[in-house]
Length: 327
Image (cartoon, rainbow, N blue to C red; front, side):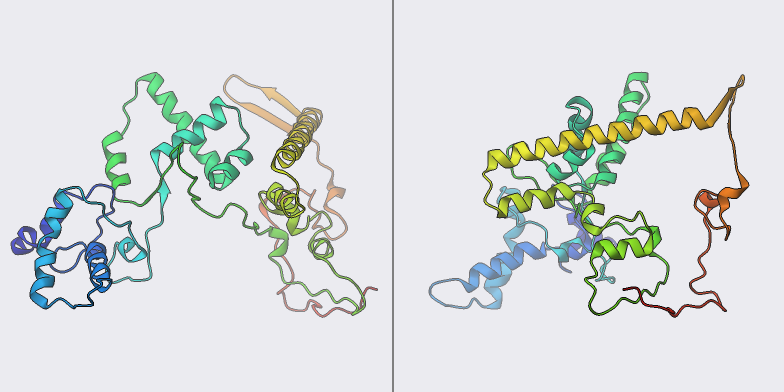
């Protein structure tokens, strides 16, 4: 053990800055693999075409620590460097948000009052992650106001061991993750057979209505439908200034519609829910009609529906094969 600590393992005592320093990134002799690969690549590109012998390659490896100490640029980490468990070659450590990117997300949402959707599209971070960053940063700011201690050293130590998505105001934005994946709607989780005639033009809108009458098509359910409109304007040859104006108008209309829906929701809640305030608790009462369950007792407005109702798609004795074809 001590032979390894004083030999190949010595490189882990003083970790390489800006690198995850996983075991798989180093060879059995303690040399940085990606740096030696770059040296071999340069060797193959020599104009004289000469091939170095083993002693010359060993001399080059011996010079690597000196090159690292002299501040020579080190290649970026590859997928092979992001395997924390050498025996599990199928697991790669995923990037996390850097502290600079978290601060920028919080600043844009809280200080600039930009919408979560806008920040997500601009910085390449999924909307749910943007909301989580804003909430956690708000808690952190509240703790700082109250004088509560933060686990700064622990956070910096953990972040140093993980690959990070950087942020720089002067550099191009690095996309952290896919932001426009279609979410799986719970209405589509059941098994369903719906035959249609061959002459019918069956679209994605029709497919959504088969699962649920109010299920929107995929183009409208993606997190960022505005990106689709921007791409359509771009392909139509619309100039950049006009595209920006159109997108600002779409954002204005969307914000107005969202505020109107929120207003109606609050008014409906105030009208349907009776609130009784106690000394410590707040009791809420809502009128319930037993007929709201529907004839089959499975209506979404029924009591207990929020806890889930099992589907009959895989239950024995149920007719699963369609008995008619709609025109």
